[in-house]
Length: 163
Image (cartoon, rainbow, N blue to C red; front, side, top):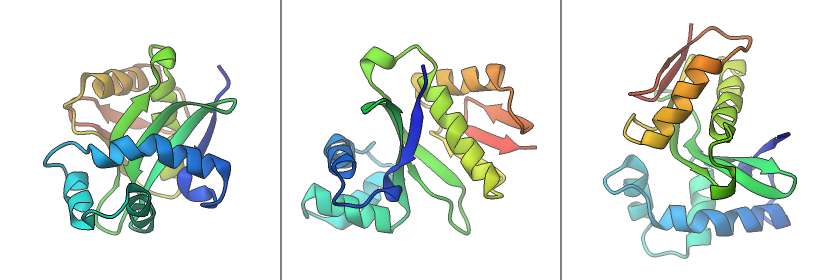
């Protein structure tokens, strides 16, 4: 399957893709993992409409990397881009049911990993090792990766490090 990848931040808010992507992300914004850092950020935004929350989140470094099969969203990674003191962190991996089991999650994580490493970042974190699905994605990446980087993947903690 030939996928294309795009970050939400790279699209203008008036584009049809941006609007459709935001509708797809609304549930995830309104239903963060309880007690997570993202949950705390969303709570601080209060009762404003979800679309406004999304715009505020983008301004704070939150983003989503979409895997597209043509015009269809096959997968997305909800993430927070690297800051001075914290690595890029993925806090939600979602793959549409009809695409599950095809390695799309691992392809998306690999794309994000390459983007981070190309910018000189030494590591990123995908989840916290609590999700069986994410552990499976990272295990697949660990065993099948044949790219230009030497990496250390620890599926049970979510860390990917460039060696």
